[in-house]
Image (cartoon, rainbow, N blue to C red):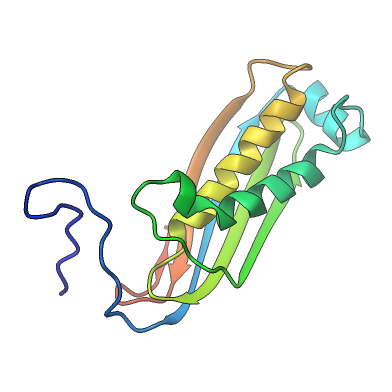
Length: 156
């Protein structure tokens, strides 16, 4: 197994060198939830949020975040993504968010999927905070990933 230490010989953080790895198709799906009052969810559903179409804006925010993960998370490599999708399920008292990201590359896209979910959740919060300030962003997690030397992973 390759040495994937994130520390250099001086014990300081470094970005792992992945230049010797072969490109493969890699995918990752992450999910998270924004919990809210039923009245806030209904405002999203009915288009009654003063800032506009919450889920459309959150979808764009999630895709943009996936594309820019390497600029935000210090040790992430910038990755040319081949696809990113953010989906929502609006419940009675919540918005469930799921993001799937793809690339053909030498490192995985788990962080990009997690970043997409988190940015989408923050956008839901931002757009609805005038209606409710005590919403909770929770349960952000990796559901599955494919590709790479470590193989596939599926959350149980």
